[in-house]
Amino acid sequence: MKTMFKKRWYLFVPLILLAFVGFGFITMWLWNWLMPALFHLPEITFWQTVGLMLLARFIFGGFGGHRRGGGHYHCRKNMHKKWENMTPEEREKFKEHLQMHHAPWNSRFHEKSGGMEC
Image (cartoon, rainbow, N blue to C red):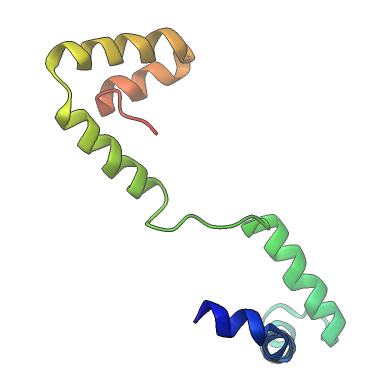
């Protein structure tokens, strides 16, 4: 599968552009259908829609990649496994390490969560 994609990557570019344009027109249609009627906002053009989508992505989603496996849940699950495999002495040492190296405003969280973090 990877070899086929490497050989024919240029075929996916039009599909990506088509999806982008389609999503832009659908968003523009929804805006122009709902926003003027509900909030008395003006209708917008396609390029204003694209700019609005980029602005929303920048403000609410960022441009970085997303973690797979559930994000913080995945991290907590791994820490829980590590915590279960620790001896009581290792757990105490780990708690002391967290208390020494974290800000005081964070210490209450670590006490409640058993000192588990990523």
